[in-house]
Length: 204
Image 1 (cartoon, rainbow, N blue to C red):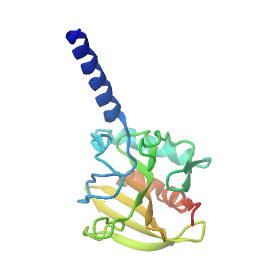
Image 2 (cartoon, rainbow, N blue to C red):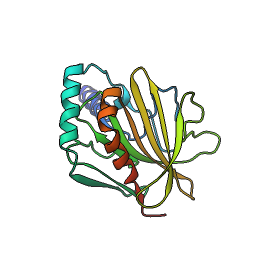
Image 3 (cartoon, helix red, strand yellow):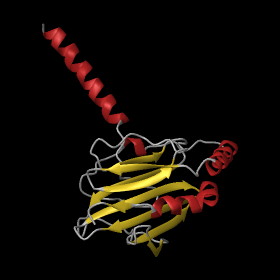
C-alpha cells in the first residue's frame, strides 16, 4: 500500500511540475534589458528562458510573411484587468496566463517575444516606465481611445525592447510589450505601433 501511495505521489508531482513548466505568465519577470519587474500578481516565468537560435534566413522569411498577412485583425479581451487589444490574425497567440494577467500574442518564432498584460502598480517597487534603466527613450503617444500612454524603447545586442505603457487612475498598469530582433522591428515598426495604439480599457 505504501509503495502504491509513493508511486501516486511521484506521478502527481511530475504532472504538477509539467503543468507549471508549460504555463505562460504574460508579464516578463526577467528581461535582457537589466530590468527586474517586481509587480503584484506576477511570479517567475519558466517560459522566459528562451534559446534564441533562429537563423537569419528563416527570420527574414518570417518577417516577410508577417508583413504580407498583417491586415486582418483579431481582438483579445482580458477580463481580470478589463482591457482589450487588436492584433493580426497571422500572429499565433498563446493561451491566457493562468493568473489571468494577459497572454503572449506571438508564438510563431521563439526569437520574438510580443505580449500584452496588466499589473498592479506598487509605489517604490514597480518600474513601469523603465526609469531605472539606462539608454531608454520615452515619448507620449495618444492611443486610439484618446488616452495618453508612454512608449518606452531601448536597444541592446541588436534587439529592440518596445513597451507601450498606460497607468490608470486606480493604479493598474497596462503593457503592450515586445522584445524582438532589429530586423523584425525594422520590418514591423508600423504594425507594432498600430497594435499598441489599439489598447483599450473598459474601466476608464
